[in-house]
Image (cartoon, rainbow, N blue to C red):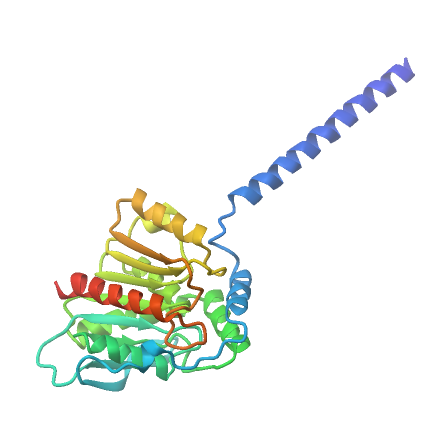
Length: 301
């Protein structure tokens, strides 16, 4: 009898262990399959961006070297106070402005608010806008990928000051510049924050432009967006992979959002950055022309 009971005990114990192992395997598979690739941890994403920019330098690209279509007037302005610190940005608009113009919040790459971002902001202003190039790095501008990675990750780890920064940027254009309509644009790090600006101001922002920024693909997160969206991405980009871009586009389509998403098959990450060594002239020029048309349609009204 004791031998029989012991055998039954061993059988039940073995069956329990097998069942537990199967459950653990299934849970592991489920976790792996359902974790969205577009939402890596901040550390993982910063690593991906550093890899994409390996050997890169913030040299001025063609998009920043071209002159504005008309003469512009530019100056540094205090546009926000965040955590008790005054934030200074770069305001540029056509010279001799005699009426309020549509506004654009321009958000820098991961190098910071450097001269190249200011130059491309002046090109945007030359198209008939009041452009505020914001500063999400507290005045820091860097020229090494490792330094840029640290700044990017510091903002991602503590996003609330950046959010408040952008809220006040919007209010500055409304209150101080009397902008009747406002859009946002950003590249790389700034592309992600252009999308975030739309999510912060889903019923206020009138146009949203993303250049290969980190994306959200959850329909529940994207559902509040009310503004038209334009996105520009590189088919060779490993930091913002095409599958994530398509998931983003699919989510917007499923929500009946107005969006135009462009993927340039031969272009890499940062192909149209104002700063960097990965510039793709053909893709960047096409994206610029589409951007200007999109902004005019949705901000000039």
